Image (cartoon, rainbow, N blue to C red; front, side, top):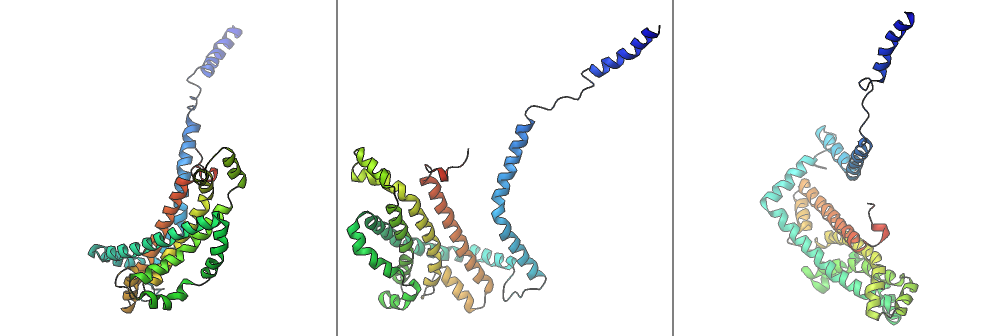
Length: 297
């Protein structure tokens, strides 16, 4: 009797413990994958936002200081006032006229100076006689500041577009020339000798070995020239310009319109950033074969 009661009391408890309803359902097998995917999305999103953290914090601090009266609006207008000024210029169409003129000057100077720098860099880097003949002279000219030539440039070209294009061309010439020259010289001689062994012609050596080996250095020169191009443009557009971002800024300075002055300064910064993004895109495309420019899959 006692044994039977003991079995009756124990058996239901054992069944309840062993029943599927008592155990919690196992976690889905795809949970780790889902969490990893979610973490990767947030990490990539955070990496994209991180470069903008400092600019946003500076602008927010600037706005707070202006709103609380800690900073005179005559010395430095509030960001809201700068945005309103930029919007007014954009709606009237005046802003786009000045941007178009400045961009045309900058790109024309880059095409002239950069093209000559690339050509001479390829020639002096490939032919020893041309290096001996030209490189020493070019290095002496390189040490002359472009801004120190303004008085002579005005005498040579007057105050028309030629003077502005000359200054920009000279400024962007040397970074591309130097990086092209050193890129050609730093190509592994063993690769060139291997190409000759396989019977490649001189043209094939250039297109398949020398230029791919030097392209990373050439793009560094282009990226540096794109930044320098806007710096020189600021000065070039002060030479009796009738349109352009520099003209807009200098004209606003005469009437103490500091908000429009800041619009011009920020436009130069924005255009410089866009030029840098363009240069990085070229690096990613033309150097996609290079392990250092391949994104992890």
